Length: 275
Image (cartoon, rainbow, N blue to C red; front, side):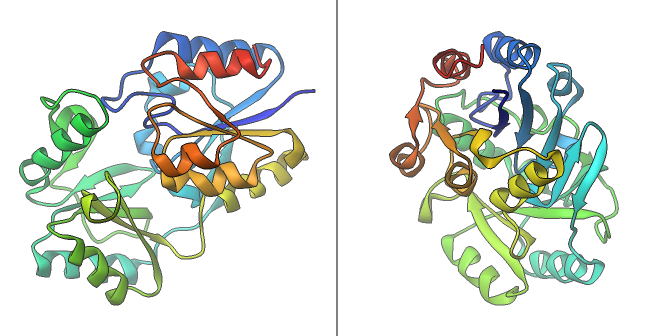
């Protein structure tokens, strides 16, 4: 029976320095050759799913933590922030002195001082996840656009640097019409906040895509490493957590595989009979 497979990207398909293990690429290609369908399901927008990721043979993607769904180039679902929401968030972040980047399918657009301000957070994020603390912002975000228009009508979400956990709390209070989250750490260790479309998550997008495909939820398998991936693993029939994943997702997963660097994706595909 063919399966529909959903892969988070960062910490699942690629490591925390944006490197794709050859074994992971091989796993995806072999699974698709065996008749399975493979989609990435990521917080990244389409602009952050680079050609070398598509080249491994993906069937499509879910992006923006669920706000965008694509199957073989056909847009199935896309819900963006309104221009007013974008303007309010940009103005508010500027007033707080918080650097940020805007995430759309056409590009990632950095605030004025993002490259400099984000360097410590990018290095700490990589180091916490077992990568190098010498990573640069341009390495972490190779296609980031600097000096672009910041008032936009095409945004999936907005990520911003946290100077303290209070910034996250205040953001929730300031934008009740948006979904506010954090990433890069748990609780007060979080490095970034993000704002996206309210009432959208990876699970909603997975169910939307599965319905479009005429497939069954019983034939779905999800792979992830972070708290934001838990709704995806919960809604799919079988959930796999990476060995480098957080405590919460490893505790709820049906299977915990090895880490990205230890060929965890390939080993799990083998164990599940996908390849």
